[in-house]
Image 1 (cartoon, one colour):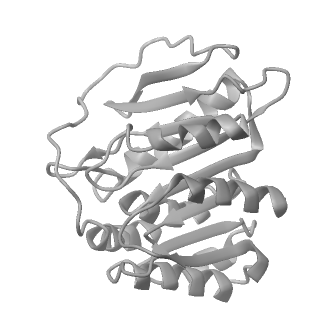
Image 2 (cartoon, one colour):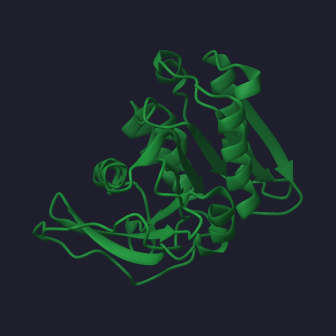
Length: 255
């Protein structure tokens, strides 16, 4: 049911996206990757071969990451037409939190990069591979691993509340939400993850998706204290503050 729902939701979330000619190479072969040792800081563009497709992600390691304890990890999924650089503006938040910050690149969806519809299974495997790999390299803290997303990436993040239910400490959905009813899947999810939902008061296209996500979470038994939904002044946009708010809710409402 979840894949069918995301196909429909991804169509709605494509409104307003800008185009790009960037894409991912096919038929790759996995290569040895020694990873990046803790103690190294900076931004690194990395490539993983996932089911025969080269997938790219940007890994930002703040100088504030401490190697004597697991670091929080924050994943940000860009909107349709964005790329792995779309989250760079949130690096000061990662620095302040001492968190590893990861921004995967979407797959080519007819001239714009996103996380569905055809690329959904590959993107699921891609994200799982990133989580596994970075947990081993640093390690990162599974009790403070967050997934956030804007627009098209926020649709994927909404469904990930179920897909990665026991792997995340919280989810942030920015200017996005659900287009179909998955209440039964949410009700069956064993963990009631803290979820932050943000949408602009002038974002008429995405307000219904955001409201639907909140309605379904509460209908599936989510405690109100774990669903932080707000409107902000503006249109179809996001800000780094929303990532910080997601982290703060997850830390205040531990699983």
